[in-house]
Image (cartoon, rainbow, N blue to C red; front, side, top):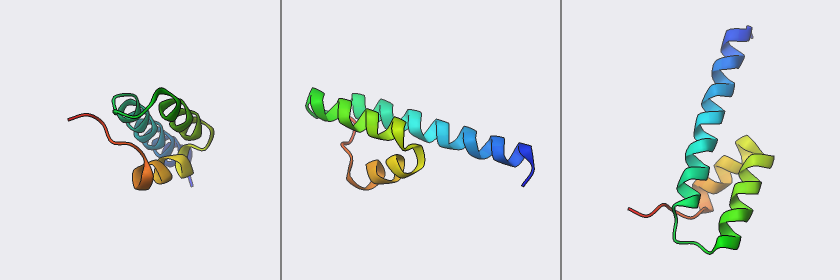
Length: 61
């Protein structure tokens, strides 16, 4: 893989993680839940995002 492809992949993961964190912080979950989800997403960016996508809190509409 060339460097441009890897950089694009990293940028996509970063954008998805930022979206997940933003959505989590705007949810109606408890503050502790928000902190735990945010830490989980930051520590495990790809796996954390996928788990959040399936089980995480949703943002307020």
